[in-house]
Length: 249
Image (cartoon, rainbow, N blue to C red; front, side):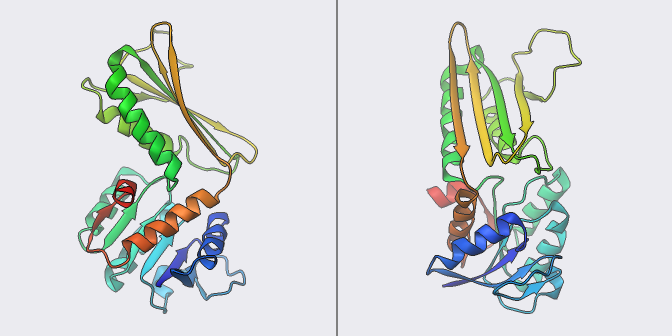
């Protein structure tokens, strides 16, 4: 059994992760990190530096601003990290990559098995269809989501871009442009409304035919289950940067 610390334990995803772990026999929650000190079945600490319990793995569903304190805590205590927070900038991604030379870090902008299957299918489709098909990505989330486009949309775009021979760039908005679509574009569009958990559609538009690959999450539980599976996988692993493909292989 592994001991888990939940970062962002009093957030929506933090509660779901705690419920997921409570239903399992291979993990247990030994503490949480959150500025909100709501009553929990485990001790809650305001910052990573204040944690005084041992944990094998930290599961983080919090805020990008907490990344650097988490990395410091992980390096000092040699604790593995499962980073599920989205919205990191380039410098933060570089920092977590550097930290992974000292501790094991599992980093994915989407912990869903289905989304990672979608990404694999999109890569295969892109290789087969080539530049004759334009690619557009549409993502929809609840009205409380802060970052746009979603980290998952960027994951999908990055995966498709890797399969293309020509230079590719992302086009986020066209309202200010009056020109034909550039074949090198990957269009990315964001919708925010209501309580949408997460929907992603990838459109491959060719000559007289279109192909759409889509995924819809009906519950946050799919992300929590993926995060806990990643934590169990990561426990005891050597330092390094791990992702969903490592878990699924």
